[in-house]
Image (tube, rainbow over all chains, first blue to last red; front, side, top):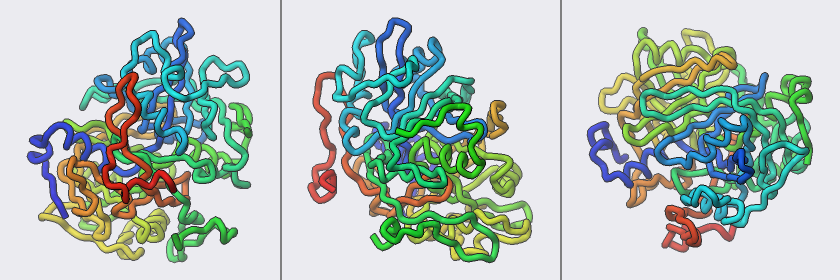
Length: 221
Length: 221
């Protein structure tokens, strides 16, 4: 194994450290956050830190890095109170990545990339048309992380739109049926395939698969 | 598309809602947190909320759900100040899932599952021997999320151990070279394969792949 200790980490080349530390925590969620400015300009930005916080009430959190993330998303969320979360699929990885370019404040990433915005049920934020899972979220609070100046944003999930293909009878969304990707580090995009799904674990009982349909069970891959 | 609005979400069957909301934010990181009690009992528990917080200094965060997560991990971290983060691979998904069973306080999940603990360089926490990425972390702070009673734990990454196969020349860890998995919802385990890796995005320039080795580029999959 290769080892990087604290002193070594601090003295690494900046890009090397960015790559290493961004990939050392495992795969990340791949989402596009859609917002609308008070002037009506549509914004979309890629985020890999959206995390489940709770189911009742349905809540999520994400991390804003003030120095690296375009601030339009944050500004719009604070001014309008709402945003959308849209899953990135294989066909969206290039435009999603391109949306991280630093466009001028008057330019919309929807116009500059190949992503189509869509409005749903009169809600005041743009969604990504091609995304198989779309969440409508309401800003609730934020916690400044004093250790490094990031901000943990807390939001309520107010509406979930999902392609029927993904939705299983018990409410579970099988993400690979929508070709949803995961992020590896800062800039790697990976396509997950379901291996197995397990029943609630109990002491002294063997782990049981929940997949009855043999065609779904791809542990042999 | 299927739609779940706020009222619908609140009135769903509890298990259905748990499955839906836990899978609607996208893929999650799949990690085992290793701790040691002051009595010397080794603990290991599966977490899917470990998130990158920053590279300089190297920091991560994770969410503790007081009502559902075994409290041993939290108790040990507060008492000893340290824990390990170990990536889950295809071969570890069954024992990792089994570690979420509610064992007695005097039982170690390492003994009860097929996971081998290993100690590295005299550090005071157990690591998971078969894990290709192992982090040694120091508790820094915690932020109670008042909106739902969860706790956001903040930690410094003090040491990184990584299998040489994963480490690329620019510091990036290619996680699929270590068969690292991602979590889908509460109980689904998926195996990601790298599709592409892109250069830093700039306005009005097409997205460029960073993969020179054609054998790595599996976008055609």
